[in-house]
Image 1 (spheres, one colour):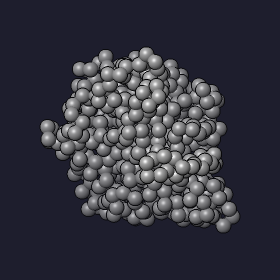
Image 2 (tube, rainbow, N blue to C red; image 1 turned 90 degrees about the horizontal axis):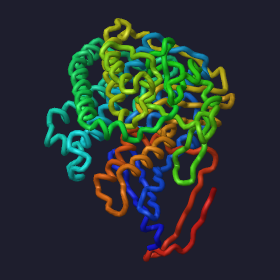
Image 3 (cartoon, rainbow, N blue to C red; image 1 turned 180 degrees about the horizontal axis):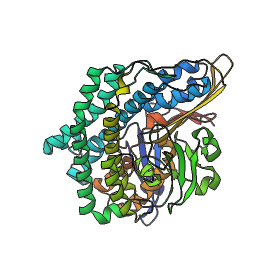
Image 4 (cartoon, rainbow, N blue to C red; image 1 turned 180 degrees about the vertical axis):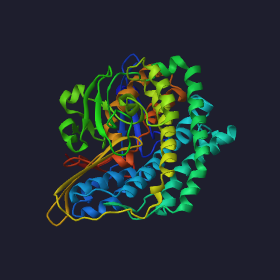
Amino acid sequence: MDNNEKRTIRISPVTRIEGHARITIQLDEKGEVENAQFHVNEFRGFEKFCEGRMYTEMPVITPRICGICPISHSIASVKACEMIQGLEPSYTGDLLRRLIHLGQNISSHALSFFHLSSPDFLLGYDSDPALRNIIGVAQKFPDIAKRGIRLRQFGQEISERITGKKIHIMGIAPGGMAFPLSEENRQALQVWIPEAKMTVQTGISIIKKYMEENKEMVESFANSPSLYMGMVGPDGEGELYDGKLRFIDEEGNILQDQLDPARYLEFIAERSVEWSFLKYPYYRPLGFEKGFYRVGPLARLNVASRMKTTLAQQEFLEFKKIGNGKPVHGTFYFHYARLIEALCNVEEAEQLLANPAITSNDIQTHGRWNHPEGIGCCEAPRGTLFHHYKTDPSGKLISVNLLIATGQNNPSMNRSITEVARQYVKGSDVKEGMLNRVESAIRCYDPCLSCSTHAMGQMPMQVEVVDAEGKILYQVERG
């Protein structure tokens, strides 16, 4: 083993995230952290194998990208299809889409906080890794674990009550929805609302208690300034389903506002890096070196002027105090922002379910191919999602680009793990709890790697043939 190998720490796999990845930490000769990299190992390539399909198939195909945020993919996809058709969805169809999208966000945020992240807060970063999971939480805090499971169930129940399926749904279609919401199912969902509110507020109490008791750690945890992007409504209110884009800088100054998502390529560029299948997007006007930006719950609260609902607005004002009116940069605060957003989602779902039009059967308008290109956008649980399709005159896809939230956070995830590693990893005396803290920097972003591992152009590839003893006989490289 050479000196370089001795100075390398590998965390493989990264635990409690969606997908497969590893972290490499490189130490210098003094044992100090020199650099850290987040390697995404899987490659799926949805962009390429969708070519040649009819554009109308995409709202059904793309939810198969992910079992956690399938609805966001279907919504971004159907918006791109509607641009191709020059079509507007029906009023009730639009309401149902919003409701299903909120349910997915609630379900995803419940999974992220209660299942994947709360073991660190409730059991401790240095606790036994065999118990530091949702099973360990259920053993020590059974009520909290049960609440988290039921909150996720509520989010999925919204989808099932409308479409008949919890995940990989069918029914979001150009022009609106293929299925209506019955009065019986509307009432069944309304019954869940008080419990869902209470559970989210329980989560908020947990994270606020932890932040208060561990103030120094929370404030210093990967606290690097960055740009932020998210969707907002006409008055700057946080908007997940159908808003415009807003970019802010490190100080909170608005760089650009009310941008049409269809113009995303004017403001966002992408590059590949040699160590990962995950792309490296950046804010085009500032270039690759200075244009890294973040998306997701923390970004959405940073760019928003206000929240859309009463209880969430109260927590939003508390959140804003952390940064004294400026953006909150600490990566740990993703957890708090995620729960504030979940509270807003439950309140907004309550409002939609109270709208008499939600059970109307006027759920879909109809159209045909009119334009060769379509771009759809919405806020997925992890951040802003774009679907961009180009078609031939028959409606067959000739080009597909999927710009995923996790990919947009990729540069910042790499920076965050480097910062946390430098803070906690010292020399050769490496304890498991130190490495868990490095992993937890990734969990703050709640990455979804299955969504994100696509490619631009020709993907680099390396094939190695080895013998029984592991000796490389020969290798072939491309790219």
